Length: 456
Image 1 (tube, rainbow, N blue to C red):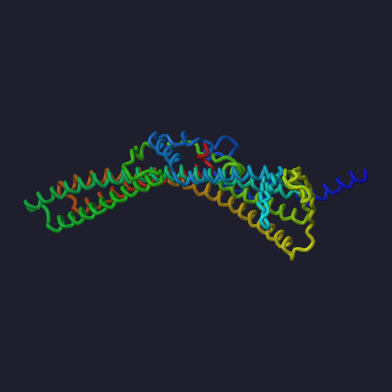
Image 2 (image 1 turned 90 degrees about the vertical axis):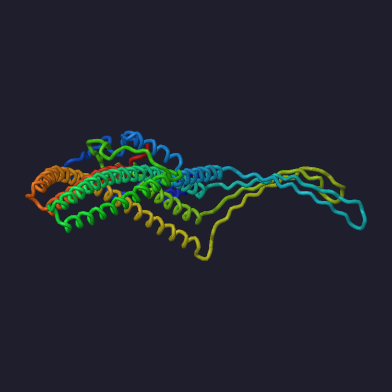
């Protein structure tokens, strides 16, 4: 009875030292206040924008084909998959560490002295060693390896989500450049036609040479801008091809105006970021790994019990009888208790505790960063939509102003400077509309990524 009570007391003592406790998420995390109050986005615990599979998030079939190709061929995500496979192999080894190890080490000797007949001896031993996990060292090592696997899986998901968002952003950048080039091309044609008209009017004395020179200078500037846009378009295609894991080529694509997204931007509860954001999960698994490392450092203060044994056959048991064969059996149990190790165990425990606190701070910071990204992307989405609506109204007004200026210029009631100013304002407004469309697409993608989207 006393032995049973002693064992129970020992187990209770070990449990109080956290050696056999599993990791638990720390309290006091800044979760409830991560999202600022929003009026136009729902925050209840229902399906959020981040819950949508990327196939439903992006309606453009050409973009979906590019994302699918990138997920299969991008080098970063292939590297992440290999790291997950490495973590799985390490976990398999950690699980097998509870079993005894077996080693076959056959030996043979050939001895000859003073011209006598050579004596051949051999042994065929099988050695076994089994470490008994009395104080949780192997258990905590296995738990730590499990968290490493989860950490690598979260890293893989982070690479996947970031890859999807980057492909979509690069694709929309290409669509923006396409529209800017089209606007630039149409403006060049109008400008060339205007110069021809001015040259005709100059011949009959209705236009000045100075106005024609100014118009040509503006045309040259537009041509240089157009050429720069073409360079940016080619570079954007090359960048997207490299990201997809293919050689540079022309990318099949749609138009920026055709892109559509879900109408309601539901961001859900901040608590969902704990289980959705891969970088937050990765930070938490790093904290769990540090927790189990600390437990291992505590276990090092307790005794270590190892059972070893060997069994085998030999043809030489002694020197009285020549080559008497027989079995060799041995068994040893060893118990080692650290007493004085020059402060290494205490130092290791202190370092492990500090690493655990560092991982906790990194985990809190990951949550704060996630909340900031959601808040920034949500506000950017609303702001981009407002700017788009405003610039579209501006374009409508400036188109009317250009029509009026052209009519007045033909009748001589307006100067060329008035027409030039109206057209430049319209060009700037059209480019702003294209930029706003791209910014809106980009902010929606960033919000989708910030909410942990792309895992399906």
